[in-house]
Length: 305
Image (cartoon, rainbow, N blue to C red):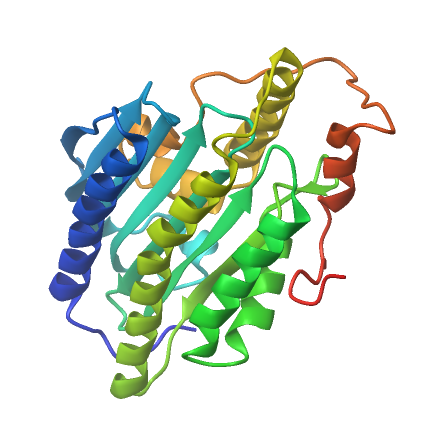
């Protein structure tokens, strides 16, 4: 359950908003040509947000960096989803999804958020995960080791626990495969001690600050790798899996829709194009087939040999 300690939600929200601005500036520089449009929106039940979307850039085909700060009354569905009592709620956070043009550059997602209930409960949640169209073990190892370094600065138990949570969460059950190579995912992160709660905020901030440097490196590693029509078709299929997860299983999508959030902003995470080919089969000796072998829970990327 959440902590009875409620932090200064205004300062938390202000940090998320500042992170949004920083990420947009850095991603525009990384892309080289694309610019984020700024789209503020109000929420009927209370609060609102700012959606920032970049399309048809040099590297990013579609990318979104969303900030929201919403509040109001919970409904019965939300009470069940949050496993809490019926009361007022407050939620603020930032969500980022980038769909690159090149199928050799991975899709990346990051979300950090703070919840506060009128009953006194409060907690942090979020995570970051990577969805390569083609899984390169060396990139996956780099990504997970970098994530572990962030987690270890706060608690050595964080990475193994949150890595397992990500494997379980970012799992497309109806396909029996993970969305990508995972990352970390945490929810209901809380502590009754005010000092420790502030440390959890620092951890949440560290995850947010981790996003751009690691993606910049992944782009640098892969942006010059050649590709053709075959790789683009495979990218469309993997984007299709991404769409399936977000519309069927993603709790953030469900939360946004059930709290009367802005639909365009909630569905910002979807790519501009995706495809579904009936009963598509991969060549057993292909790079596509090799990628499917990695889309499973429990891969120990840190000690991969």
